[in-house]
Length: 273
Image (tube, rainbow, N blue to C red; front, top):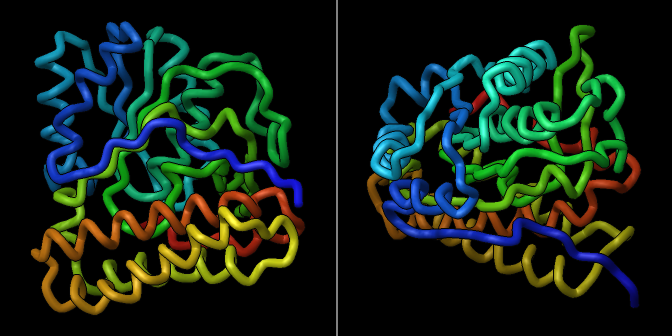
């Protein structure tokens, strides 16, 4: 059996992990960072700990809170242009799947002459990118550990950019950021993660022992905790298990990202906070 396994090389997991982001950015000698998020996440205060940590590290920060549902191409291009013009050293994203997918492409487009329209597909993004750190606020898409960004074009088509370059340098998973998620969104994102794990385990093409183990572990964590977090959203232990399960499901599912039809089956629920 031959297979290739690729995922995020560095993961920081635990309550309060987002408050450590400043020290991680120091490792890249970043002087000015772009924070990609959306208005609701920013207004809810979910970026405050990270912003404070970045300021404490002596790093300048600019917030782009214009992320929209389904990562529209014009928003990605606008953020990438800001990033190029102002010479940011790194990109951080805090939010749901749309924010993470947007940030992946901003970090790439800001560093290369490529146009977004030219890199839809598999392994067409082959240039360079800025250092990239992703902080999910839902236990759902697993985008923080995948090489995939889903984009809504001006024609309202869903297209994907799939490249190892979109795998971030760091995935920072802080379950405290998921505590305020309402029950219906908790359920929707949890089911999203469960579906990713099931698809990974039942897929025939590129199936391998690593993805099987990840999918089964993800299903065990998610199934044991989804009802708990829907009933009591303040249960930090259960929220932690959900976030870990979502990440493992994303790792498992990412191995099938290049398979025919896989992108079309990715969740449409990129509008979640």
